[in-house]
Image (cartoon, rainbow, N blue to C red):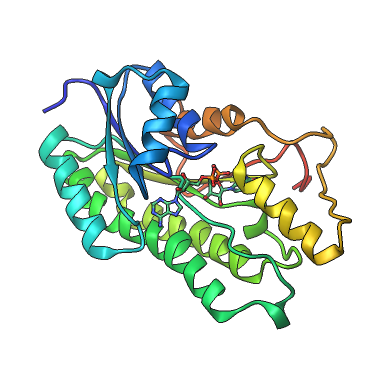
Length: 252
Ligand SMILES: NC(=O)c1ccc[n+]([C@@H]2O[C@H](COP(=O)([O-])OP(=O)(O)OC[C@H]3O[C@@H](n4cnc5c(N)ncnc54)[C@H](O)[C@@H]3O)[C@@H](O)[C@H]2O)c1
């Protein structure tokens, strides 16, 4: 069993995920880095200069129940504990007006963002219940708090994530487990680039995004800082909240 605390991060090779891993490592955790393939995990370890004795990579598709179940079982076998679970993995799919939004696109977004987050919680919770302690942070979005254009599938998948977080926060507080979500505005990652490409496609090259009063996108580390805080004892009475990290974009 690991003597240091253990965090499990999905989407750990992504723009925000690798900063989440760094934040936990900087604070003495061992990090289980989960992503859909080896390449993004290896790239993140190399680019960020992570100490290989403090991380372990696990590849899985979080939309597969079998893969989630076996990966969590392996992590419990390897580490003996899971102190924090951060469900960063997600896709935005292809943006389009509702009439043109394909059902396949909609379903794949739900399989990953919504069902994947559910499966990760479902199979990690038994370990946290046994420990009588744990913190879960899920990824919502400002898109899961209002009705942006061209993202009926993505936006509603994030409404669902914010909602599921509250279900778990309610059911598992008695076991010392807190569940919260973060909802970023625009963050400077590949997902933002992909979104802008789609916006340009739809608008014939006139893509524009609302940045809010700070007039800039978030750096991934600014999201990671909020995620980490939610997992600390400083946030010991914070449960079921949706932490908006959007530079005031929603002014909500
Ligand atoms: N970038 C933004 O502007 C923004 C805004 C609001 C919310 N978010 C949310 O933040 C989270 C992280 O986004 P990001 O910007 O770092 O995106 P990203 O594309 O850089 O990273 C996403 C990661 O998830 C992984 N992933 C995708 N599908 C997977 C699957 N089926 N199984 C396992 N791993 C899978 C990808 O390989 C990738 O490493 C997402 O949930 C996203 O919806 C992002």
